Image: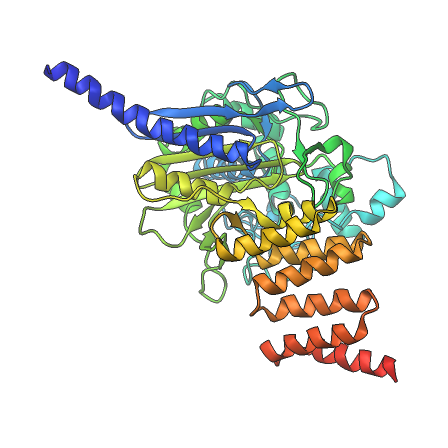
Length: 496
């Protein structure tokens, strides 16, 4: 074998084996209804893995292409942060400046720009902020410019002292977008085009003027109508989870429409300091310190994370510094993740809600590092609930028995089964609800909360004696369960 041929063979193996594994990985996810969209994986010195799985329009069987555009949801927050830091780099503002310096009507003098980008402001989020406005003006489309007048009108108090606590909040980034507009003298959409999209050569990305008006390459969005359905439906046929979702046109917190390949161009330009200096990028990727000197951390998918300025990051850096931001709206799941030390990136855009993007990108990083990985498993509660809903009680029970013997085939969490049981209860499917909580008790026999929930469901179904037994079991596991004590007293009082 000649040296040239040996080199060519080595290159072929380097490219093809990870590519084949990634294709098998994502094909399996698609087959199991856990991913429908575009995936891009890149690492230094090797070609980008890029492929699509499923349909951009399921009804019309239209397949994805490299030009398929997705709303990227909260991944947008990294763009907003980058824009603010660009303005800081140019001397146009300071991160520690008060928001009031740029938006004089803003009613909270102690909130800084840094509080906004680090989610430590204490502002109220928008989910219920505009309920009265929506009732008064049902045809009104609410945007960023309506936030400050609404906060003033209702004298909305802060949830906590700025900098004392971390709390994820979309309003923070809406306000930050308004600061970008005020300082730059151009619209948020125009600023993004001129200072990020164009320099990064992102030709298929934009900020829509009206997010309800889709361009020709934009994908349709799909979701499950309930927790016990296994059939996706177009989000246009399902009621939005919050009234504000259908009545708003916010930007800065979300809103950008892009492609997976464009996001790869963005991360490459960002992490190679083409659109933001090294000092400012490091500032964005430094964990936020609260007023008490402690770093704000919490778990995501079993891993501890912290938050910088518009970016999440894993606190465990043993496999490199991994930073990311995910996004989720009705019928859409997204994530952009980057291992800074290894210059590896994973970008996922799925036009179905609840795709397991965290476990997916973690498994992909394991795969390309040639370490053992596990393909995310299907959700047991959804399959189980579907069987109950379709009258297959025996199959549902057999599924639980099989899972107890082989727990690796499906993903089963106490939270999922609890939510399923309560949804059946709310939908007056009482028998299914009680069966779900009974199965949850088999799966999680040491959970006091499962028995507490089971007791509540039994009580609502008029089974008082059985409810008492479940509350008692809950108290055996957790003697501090005040609700259990109160409910037993209440039931016994009603029985006299």
